[in-house]
Length: 146
Image 1 (cartoon, rainbow, N blue to C red):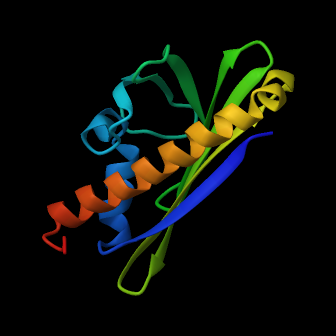
Image 2: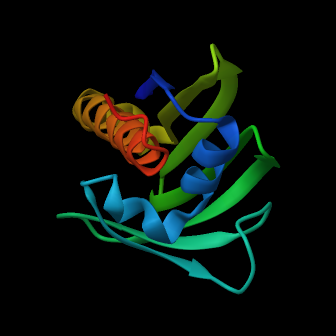
């Protein structure tokens, strides 16, 4: 199975990083590989929330929040095709007057195992772009961008 995780230190309070990470419709502002994310239903992101995610150059899918531990972490998952699922995790930890943010991506299912070499490349790029973009966005909004 393809699986990758990336952690970045952000010079911003965990509250700021959490609010940015759960504002899924704002993700295209800092995750450049995303076209759009549309939350289905009213209210804030929480356990059971569903979000239509459309990455650039790929078909969209609906992701469902399967774990939610505010303001520390959430996990969501989707089925891209029969036998190919994706699971993404987002974990925030207070660290050195800022926040350590870890994003992870993993496949599930038999097709995920077959596509693992290709998806590992995409996962590494997407977690790198997402964590760097989240860092930049949060630090710019708090005036701490160096």
